[in-house]
Amino acid sequence: MRSAKAVFIKQLRDTFKNRMMLVQFIIFPIMAMIMTELVAKADSEIPDTIFVTMFAAVFVGMTPLSMTNTAIAEDREHKSLRFLVMAGVKPYEYLAGVGGLVLLICALVSVVFGLIGGFVGMQLVYFVAVLILGSIASTLLGATIGMLSKNQQAATAIGTPVFMTLSFLPMIAQFNETVEKVASVLYTQQVNILVHDFSMNSTKPFLIIMANIVILIALFALAYQKKGLKNG
Image (cartoon, rainbow, N blue to C red):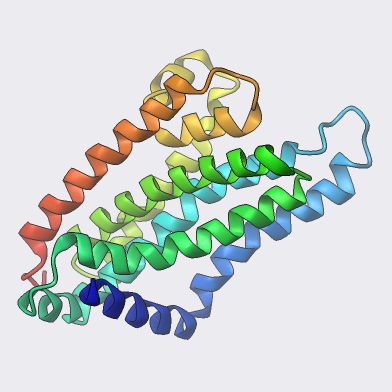
């Protein structure tokens, strides 16, 4: 795993150089905290956790996808990925390095969300686990989009409508049955369902999320093999 570690360290340095990436990880918890304190807790008819679960679900669909997408597209644009592939870095090693950092930060942010929501014990563990699973799927999708994009500009153009759809479709699904049926196959819809109701039978939602992850792993591996040595 030396290659994965080297990629992880490289990505860590790149991330701290790009402050806009870091902002993406803190903006949603801040918004959740403000809305919780000023709106939810001030109105007895609004559940205290409603804004935490809402922004957490949006975070999962948007931030890890955007960050991974941008990071990999940047590597392709600057030809860093080409050199890594020629050095024998395998798809899983590269993904573990880039995605590992994204998921580590996502895990920390998920804990922050949970603490803002007042979750403790197994509720907190469950909440964080759901968000991490969703983040894994978003990271894989972002990695695939980044791999297939010629540069950062193209990656942003493709990635933005994708994460906007994944993030906000579950919200629309709450008010439209047709949209709900369409969104039911998406991992973000299942994450949204799971974090809003801890008492429900979680078997089906978890299976759908895992199916999404398996498909996205396969897509990334194909994209890496096809585009890894190409600059455009």
